[in-house]
Length: 172
Image (tube, rainbow, N blue to C red; front, side, top):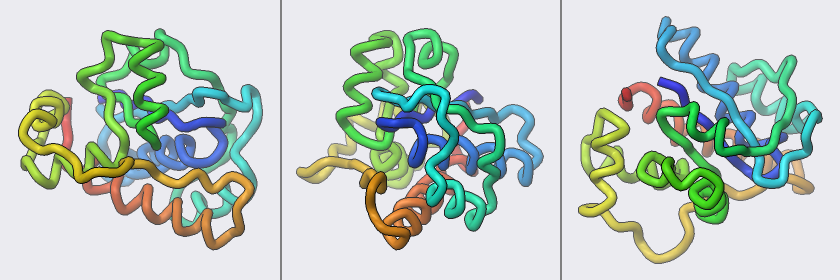
């Protein structure tokens, strides 16, 4: 299963999710699970934001060698699932790669749907949307850019807490 993670600058949230996925796959012996990421307004060519990289390391991920890139139809369509950090980014992915609409979720949405429906595949997760609507309000992960270290830690922890159970359960 190949997951494409999306945020705005592709230097904080989406690389955190990407690299946590890689660490999880290595630890679990999941050679079938890979991840990459991009940004809707990526800081193309930059590495991870230093505080995000530090938080990622504390969570067990490796920021080394990361380079930000902008989302494209090809990057999205080469994936089995697209996970964004905000509803706005989810909408942008669908605008850029309309064929991916069914398998594009915010991270909070995917976690909520998995929990509510018991989904174990991406297709079941997509089907669960019809039965399990969200409470009013956005299902977004806060952008920590420009914030203090405490915010980066909280955002990294939130990503890990939502992502790791999802990775343990969802398959293609």
